[in-house]
Image 1 (cartoon, rainbow, N blue to C red):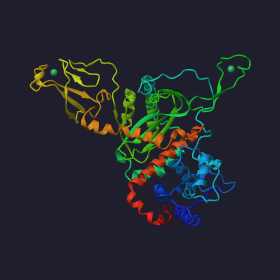
Image 2 (image 1 turned 135 degrees about the vertical axis):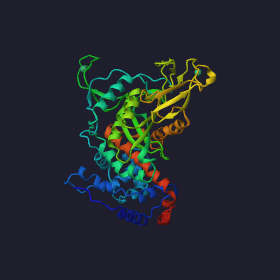
Image 3 (image 1 turned 45 degrees about the vertical axis):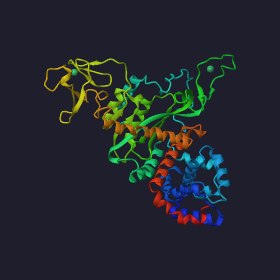
Image 4 (image 1 turned 90 degrees about the vertical axis):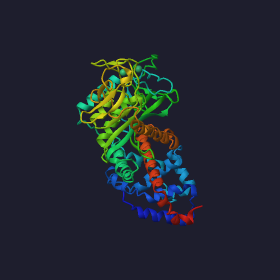
Length: 487
Ligand SMILES: [Zn+2]
Ligand SMILES: [Zn+2]
């Protein structure tokens, strides 16, 4: 059967009644949890998932209660599995009550998996088939403290060329229903509360992080070579996590098996709020992930316009500047210096590896304003240098359209650049929160579907927590309602 909508006011009534009848108390430290779920109406999930339920069979559990319970699990004990979560609810009745479940009728673990699977619009829980050719090569190690090597500019260039020449291509992704839900129910609220920054000219940041799912990849043979005494063969194998492979984790300095999680976040958000997650196989490079993620995000994000994107030096490739510029997004990317050679121009001025014009005597010229009508930056060398007989010294012009990487619209290293670029680390803080506070990697899932559910669940928790913090004074007034049950 299709689920029946339980209005939020009914949930609130049931919570108060169960607290009274069950003689259950809420410890003060857990107050924010009560405030968050009391104030957040999650009942729209019932309508959102209508099509994902069959018309036959028994009446399903209230989807809003299932969702609340999953989020409460991620907020309170994400290090345990869902099976253990049900035991936690039995031991700690307040969690069952806040979920919206009757104390004597908790769902089983399979009910949770059935419910979460309804957010997935793929026909299988993985992106790729389990049967794959035997994997051979190991990815390159990065240098110490450095991320995966930036050795793929050719690949990024071909990918960007393909994307720009096929703007109509927008394949449906198995994770699209999750993003749709996240955008309509959570991003939109954060946007209206002003928690994402200026939504009409959004500044975003992007960065990848390893997501370790297991130490080694697991696979089974599809042939009987080994039984016949053949120890090495090239027959396909069945992989238990077909979307994962082996990558180099530079922070932990070791190989790992799992995903490369690429995250786009709202850089001006005071709470470092995440916007769009993308799972790639572990060996994927940041630059390639960014190209795919930002294209998908541009095609799906409907709440505002992205104006700037802040990326670290691992993204410093001409093709990425071009892609972002085509999307009318101003790139702010740290230079990844390639060699120390100066670049010749048609004149006697040369360009340094960091994009600064050098006068014939080899001195760095100074920026001298931006000419909007001509769309060019003016540079000047002091008359004292003696490199020119002109009264005010030598002048030179650079054009962003000639080379967006060398001559960005906002002068690299200027005060304005520094002010904008320092917000880039917000995406690192967001990724850290997901991995450390919400124990992202403690999920013991085999399917990409469940990993996406976990990531979106954690992102929803981040947004809901920010709603509480930004309205704390107002929401804390509710304590009067809960006073008899606060211990
Ligand atoms: Zn074989
Ligand atoms: Zn000079």
